[in-house]
Length: 113
Image (cartoon, rainbow, N blue to C red; front, side, top):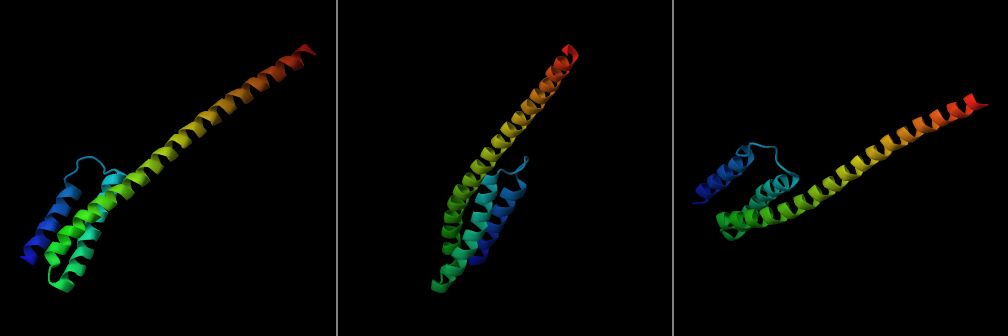
């Protein structure tokens, strides 16, 4: 029974990993890592009392939830960073435009003198 549950957990984890046609989001990566780590820790803790399979299932469920929450938080941070990078690039372009405009004004002023 324990071996069957371990095999099912492994197959499920591999299916989650390779079943996605698009790149995984940070939330999905966190959920996957949490599931694997949680099932391992749950199995280790559960084996002390003789319930390694149950421990693995409970640990996988908790790991999935916690991993998804942590991954979601990191994904939000990445999105904010990307937005700030875009704003920075936009400000940089505006600054270059203003510098070019200032140079044109300087040339006009020199020509008038």
